[in-house]
Length: 391
Image 1 (tube, rainbow, N blue to C red):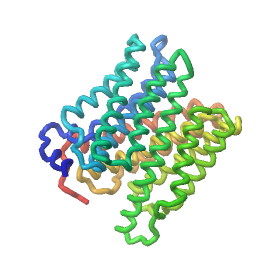
Image 2: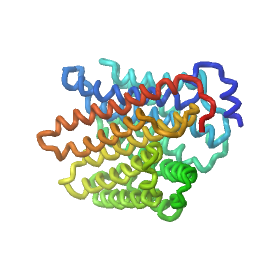
Image 3: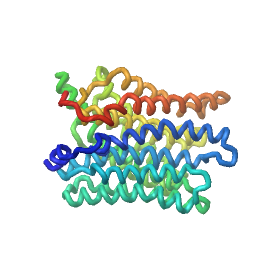
Image 4: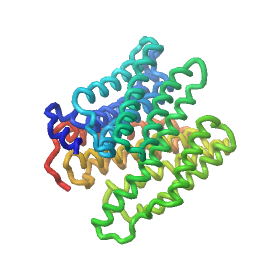
């Protein structure tokens, strides 16, 4: 295949031999750094303190965008059979991402220029993914191209509405894209990887095949996410979110995740998908009932579904593509415990009364430990050559 030939011919640094390498490392490092940087700036930065909008933006359009880029620049060549983005083009793409982070964080950097520099990365990434999928005639994954484009437009919307309109429109668009991507891609990989593992373990009760429940869950997730983006405070959006959350939890139950307890690399995928259902359900309830804090649902979706599922994919993909065994070691298990605990504490924080500040600090520490732990445990794998096949 062209992808295999390109990898064999590449003689540059291992870090730029495949898209997942730089972007998983950069994304994890930034996730670990951005949260404590924001909290320190908030408490001690004075007039230069980074805002809440900056924090939200960097989680959605900095960290999440990097992981999406790492996943797609690795997966798309496998989908299309075309040559991967490697070497200098990959260096350039990573450089665009870094430039965006610097422009958004630099004190006194012109707002309009920062918007242009930051927006460039996702727009270029979307163009690259469209080119590869269309040239490869990989029609099945056109929806993925569309979702990356919406994520890029959400970032543009965030910048255009700052100081003019509600920047939360762009934030909701990005969270909607993340939810649909998890439902779409997660709906492929969770049952597939579970089925593969079960067959190796001679477990007969395999995940259910794709069917009406899956189609309904996907359609409801897209409808609920779109409606919430445009009409966040309406009864219809709340009701759709609740139904979509329930549909995704029903879909998850059909994949028999409770049988995968012996392998963290598999059950973490089920937990990540479970957070998606919980996040949609809680956001919907917060729309319908003012007693349910909106932040609980938002962070079930972001810290929970996005945080857990990204680490689940990052750890598995890194191990597989670098020739390591597809089995979690102690460091990987610690990462999984940290990110799930971080999400649980963050979701519970609005209900903690006077202990809320302590809960937020604990959640931030655990989030940093999870992604910093990934950078430490997996950094050497991402920067060194692939081992001989171990699986």
